[in-house]
Length: 142
Image 1 (cartoon, rainbow, N blue to C red):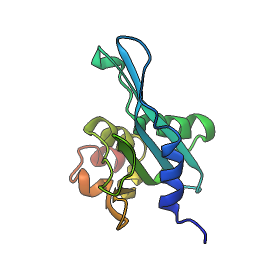
Image 2 (cartoon, helix red, strand yellow):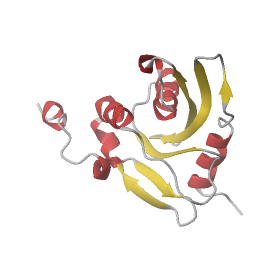
Image 3 (cartoon, rainbow, N blue to C red):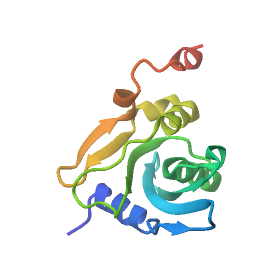
């Protein structure tokens, strides 16, 4: 049986999940993400955080940066993200405020991105539902 896209994304994200302390100040791989770009390619990333919040990069932004650096793409169709042991059926993360803002600033079309919120039922939410009335649409419409 062929895997659905969510299974493929979860499998790719799981490859990134391996919590570690890089130093007494920096941790990594405790949040994992995989996304499907507009052309169907899959990119992944992991979170890296330091004692100073300004050096933190969320898994979602790392995956999006990998997409952009490797292919120049800016539009995400689907995204899965998790922490604390991986997808155990209890649901997925939604991107934090900084990541939501990043995706919308990257392309206004990312408002339609589907984000997996329940691994068992394949329930999703769109970025637009998470960020209604985003302030930046006015600038895109000019």
